[in-house]
Image (cartoon, rainbow over the protein chains, first blue to last red):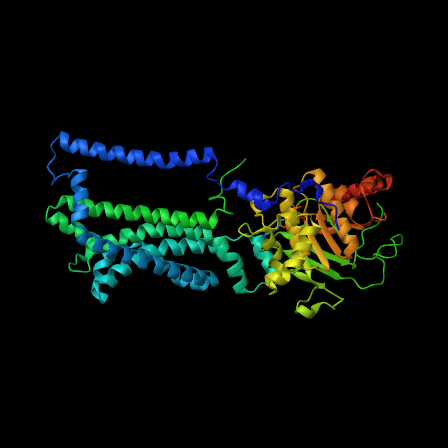
Length: 291
Length: 282
Ligand SMILES: Nc1ncnc2c1ncn2[C@@H]1O[C@H](COP(=O)(O)OP(=O)(O)OP(=O)(O)O)[C@@H](O)[C@H]1O
Ligand SMILES: [Mg+2]
């Protein structure tokens, strides 16, 4: 029909072009770069552990002050029957809270953008809940909630909820006006604009909220358990940590601490990975700059 | 000046088949349209304009004279403060809309970065509830028209500026609109690409019999493309001249070097300067 293809007829199909762009493991340069990316942090970690072990033996530090790495490892294995279930409890609270925060945050954000009035009415309360320190609300929640578990869940949810809400709401509102015009021009209804335009446009913002919320959910789960100070079968890592401190079982305290930070790091990586997978095809933040 | 300030029906001279003087009812008719923004800016004052079906009309004028505003109002994006927009040939309100199928090309490509080229072009059909498989052929046809059929699966960020603009044109064409509104679609492109897209646009226009309203601030581009140029002035935005470009189509690159073309460019240029002087006087 028309004559315009000449200037930009691709030599290879775009599918092939796209494949070339993704890092392929056969490319020696890429492989080397990836190895270095893994090797450097691992080597650094090894060096730090060695330094720690050396310090403890060289200066004869008592194990109730600073246990050696091997003692911590031993405690991890021997006390796993205590730490494992505690980890599970903490994980359950964290992820349930995060999942609920995700649903609640997105749903409320969608509700907020529907009308100025709803936003004016509801948003201040979301802010109040967020700015009041969770440790201060925790005792009250402990009184009202039917079980300690549910109280911890509510605390973690409250903390994780806000960043997801505020980021998503921001994202839903910062849609390109021309795209909104385009949707209006083609007679899109509310649902179509939300589903095809606002939600995808808000995705990067939502994922930022998720990354923040994920980290906060774990922190809140731990802090709330400190505040609850409950004992028993259903206690999480935070309680085990406090307990180890009272009993001066410092190796176990370290083991519990390590489990907490590993969990935090894994949450961070998981949310970053999700973010990368969802955005790498189009969003500036996830696309490698090639000039 | 070739013609005088007059909206709608100038004197003789236009070719019979797409003549502005033809008795056919206009496709769209603006009468006394004004637009005042909430901050008090008078973007348009008392603009009257009849667009005959099948014509290629350019709105030409300095920056800020209300070209985009006028185009948006025609498209139904944003109400006029006063005046009316009529669609006298009302055969097209099957969809419930008071105006025919409109294709709109914005000043920027305005693509959804998260969607592939295919899905971007498919959007208008999708919003009308057409399934993916049912739209496939239309989308590929539209992409073929702009020469991007091999890039259906690419993402906007993988395209050059000109290619993005062509995607946006394909999206405007996919519904086979009767009326194509284009807001400086080629302003950001280099001259070679612009010339090429100009030719492609003319080919498509001639073969499909669309009506095109084309906003530009380039005298040369407007003369090359249009059979009618509406010159606007700023502050307040208004129509100051309405010129017929009576050169036959098809116009190819050699038209750019013809004397007819150069004469028209000079005339239009003068009209534009008059318009800007007028503004200084006002
Ligand atoms: N949303 C708005 N609010 C207030 N004033 C506006 C708004 N949009 C446009 N204007 C004003 O209306 C006038 C016309 O704007 P418009 O965008 O139609 O100009 P234009 O002819 O398309 O200019 P350009 O060639 O630079 O795109 C300008 O003076 C501008 O300042
Ligand atoms: Mg404009």
